[in-house]
Image (cartoon, rainbow, N blue to C red; front, side, top):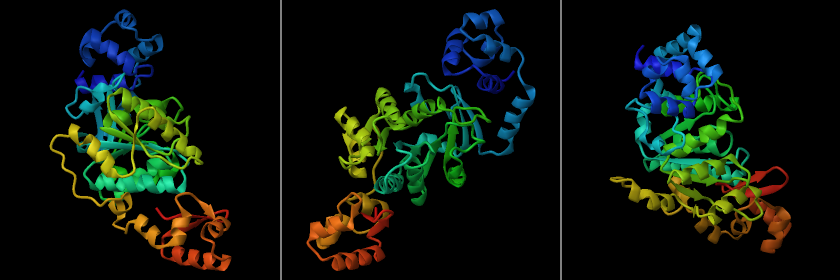
Length: 371
């Protein structure tokens, strides 16, 4: 049996995971030798009875399906931990994922990467910030890593793609599945110009226990992790803690004290994460650990970094109503109180700002700045 076939057997045997593989390699040194061991020896190595039974009677049709998938396209990959393509950055994880499946360009595993994670149900401002940071960091030459989830994850991937930059999506399913299904088109775009990776074999459906395992790979692949909007009980905080445990930088974006999705970020900042407002804050912090990296000159604000648009802070100084809108959704009566203008004056100016693309009207009679 070839080394690759041995790894594929292990990777597609129920009950064989990172911890069991770690024990087998410590005892036998490599995958083929481990598979050649007797059932008693496997038992002594801590392999469970169901896993031993599955190893003794593998499913040849299923294994052939995996082999056919790998042969069907040169962008389909299986990368065990002894493969030269396996990212060295994952060595700091506990336990180390013993293999990755890939769909796309595996060269992206060699570039400096920054993770952007956060709420699946972000505010308009949070989604816009994730996309802007994703676009700006990708334009600066970083791989943007996230988890293909709805909300902040999807916005970060979209931002990187908008910059024609590099992005990696780490999934909690097999690569022949997309979760959530609404992100199928996004997943295809990432596969075409970036990389999808997973620790899970083909056919794996989404399950609650899969996502913490996915999160540790997001943290491990990245030099730093940025959290954009997260509640106190959030999977994004798990990613941040895993990143910190692996010795990586953690950044958090502050928000309104009235926004419950800012509380997780504020907790991270209290716990030692670095507060971030622009991509320069991130790049300056991590430049020391990226020898040879030189960021291209960037504008001062994330709005200008991401899109080349004028600095909204300067615009606000010139427009009293835009300044009165602030940075959180606001009602018209509040704007009347803040400006002292008549209702018809506020309404007229709101319409002009909306037509100019500087504010957006939200359901419930609320207004918010664009971006």
